[in-house]
Length: 192
Image (cartoon, rainbow, N blue to C red; front, side, top):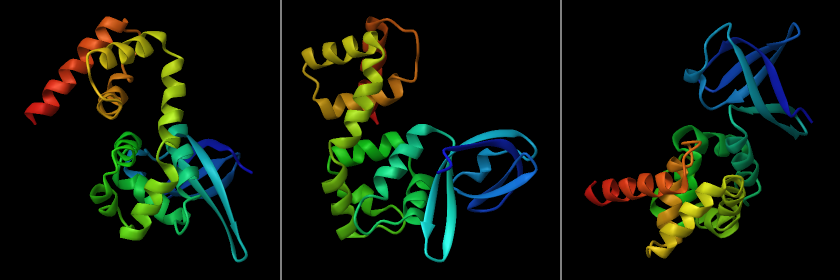
């Protein structure tokens, strides 16, 4: 199994990129070619899909996208190309919030997803993706303290999950600063 490719962007198209690694070009299904620059260095975390008539690579810029992709393709009726298209139009954070809040309407808007598949995604993934996010926050004690403070203020876990995904991107803050930032985001959500 090829875990990642580190090389130069040789070419890209609508849904693929060719990464040159040691004078070998790997064609990788890729959801965000607009984020790449020709002849620039790139690292793609990959999934190797093997079928009777084809071997394909699917690439992602972050491990978070890669891990969500792996969970998506385990959902009954969801193939790798559909999973890749989902990640093309939504962020990992927004997708997790949609699953955890049972937002069937948002999931059905994703490409290739009907009512039955949307329900299956929620059934199979609810609770599993939040655990991964919790493990990330456990690495940051100040962020964990901020989450506990927001719970003490009466916010629901689903509300906290919505704002903490963007708040967690800020590194090196104290728990008080995380709480203030989260409260500002709550206020913006109520206004918007």
